[in-house]
Length: 308
Image 1 (cartoon, rainbow, N blue to C red):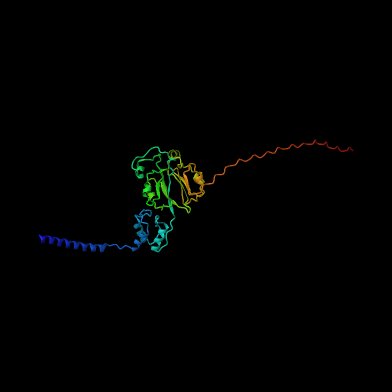
Image 2: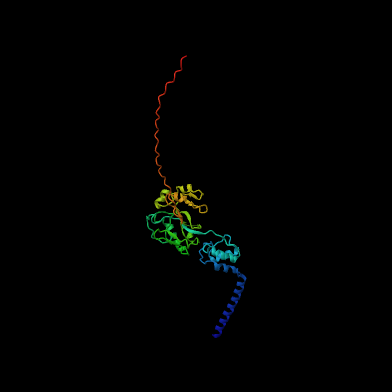
């Protein structure tokens, strides 16, 4: 009996050794030598794996940086300029200067502006609600307020405001990773340029219905009247499908469109208040001078010439 056990152990040992040798040679044959720079770059990346760079994660982004050898067309929005400088130092290249951006909520359908007409009691998920529900106010383009964007944000920069029912962006925490943009099934959230003073002008509406129907759902909806487009001197505002859109690459933030919008759908953030419009002062009537009568003197009869 002991011989049988000893033989079994010996066979298993020899088999295991043979497999180990085979696996060793296979590993040597197919091993992938990885550039050590990838580990260095991965260490300086934030490690959020937010996907804002367009890659599967920070490790994939590090591989893209090293493989390309420079930062052209690649950026880490979560890391910002500080991380860009560190990556550039490792790669020995010039850091890419990306224009800072911030998430903007393009919906003004708050509880005050969009009166709820129904209630959604299903799964508290925006994607599911979007597929089966127009919205509590009846607007099929407005924010559903179920918080998918807030749950997708890994930087605690988004939350649902209890008073308005809309997402609120913390500008100091937002890194413009774009996770909230991808999470919103209705395209309510957009990344827009972050001005030096963090100012921006945008249309807080996505409703493409005609003006009358849009106003039924929300009193602050864009009605596509085109007044903003007519008053813009920089060709930054265009109305298409009953909806105005402001191109932030052309907008000079003069705010003429803000003052012209009849529904308040255009928002200007972090600006001082606009000066009041000058009111036309009634001109005081000037006293009309009455013409003075000039008394005409009776004409003197012409002197008769002496008769010869």
